[in-house]
Image 1 (tube, helix red, strand yellow):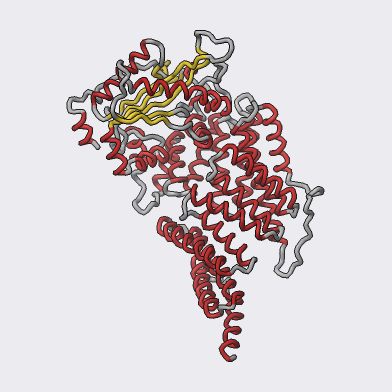
Image 2 (tube, rainbow, N blue to C red; image 1 turned 90 degrees about the horizontal axis):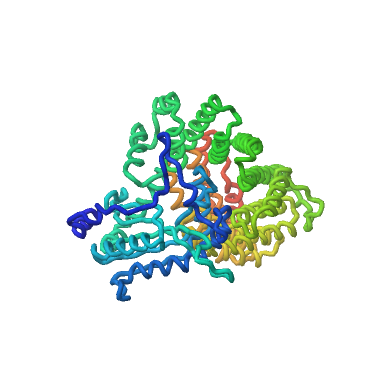
Length: 621
């Protein structure tokens, strides 16, 4: 990529170009501040406060922006230059939420959603260096006339990304004129749009080299894609061994440094990249202690730390994880309630939703724990009229209802949280036997997600799977198979074939087919689930030395093989059943060798003996 840049810009005209920008930030007393006037505006010319306001304004602004893009690639005689102009659809809602939360949640002034500048996007491919220079000349002419402002600009011919890619990346601010009855010469509002200008030859080679995956890696895991940001973290990670382990002396020196920013950055690396959730939790707890000593236990900065600590406890999945996660989330909630001026209803609802999910999980654990192998099925109250949900679930729903009544109509972030809460409620009702209410909740969650998200989004797939589970519990297996099949297609299109969630739905679908006596389809789906789990398990076992990871990888495969063996047995193919149960026994020995070498409880042993006996009888006959 560097060689191509030198070839196409031999005199450095592209790399030396300085854009005339209006400036997104200003410095004061050695600190950098963001100019609030450059936040996104709603259609009334006020700062965007909600996602729905942003999308409404973006829909109007896109028509103006597309016209600006066409004018940039057209010369004074009306002739379009050779190359390509690509106008993009509006950014997806879930990606906007993710970007607002991940990139701008701490930016002041807020709100974070008002800083998402790439909802409207456009790309210009130029075949020559001169075409790129012409684009800049036309852009500067529009700026001089007040038709656009250049809020920010990155000349990545001068400072390429770490993958070596070079382009121009600009944020343009456009006046969007009023088209209503009271049209005036003044803009109704201003809207920021992203423009990328590429050299076609470099762009094409970048596609061949798949360089974008490196860009995504550095942006996600190092919170930046420039040399300075990444090299700093690379130096911090110097003591990390090639095996993925970290010296205790390194952690000790990091804690003693009391460098909260560095501790936070590395805890994120330990959480997502290595991963080492134990170390991430250790650093976060040290951060909490340090911040508490400086600012008090209930300081606003501790709220985020408590939430991360809770999430990390759940990642570790220990016996004490649920109680410790709940304590962390409750501490975060207390801080938000003490700082209502800084908190938002959305943040409060999100926290209460976390607590509700934990409460529903405990209901399931109690139900599972109460069940004995020979117990009669518990009677189910289909309507659920006298069912009492956990207090955390009720509290979260009340907070959700209050937030929805105060928010502008169609607030998308709250709608998605409402869908999550409905899904949690549905799970609780299912576990408590109130199937009518479970179906209502899961159906409403699916409706919201289909309206807001892509049809193959994993949340849509999850809702379809929930409905399949509901139908199966009602012994409506044919309907369950329909929902599982739709869920499977969504997961395959959204997450890919080789994903744990896809494997899970193959498993559920296989069991449902088995209930319908469609043994061939059942075995096919269950074998596909095993194939995916083996591929994922091999990677996880290869990447991590954590014994619990190894245990769960083997246990999932073993349990599904057990189901395949039972299906062969029921089908009457006893030799295949015996062969499969032998594999289960062997697999279970591996499982317990990893988890506890003193325990031997082969999952399939009893059925193996039964099948062996049946096989001997069949042979004699």
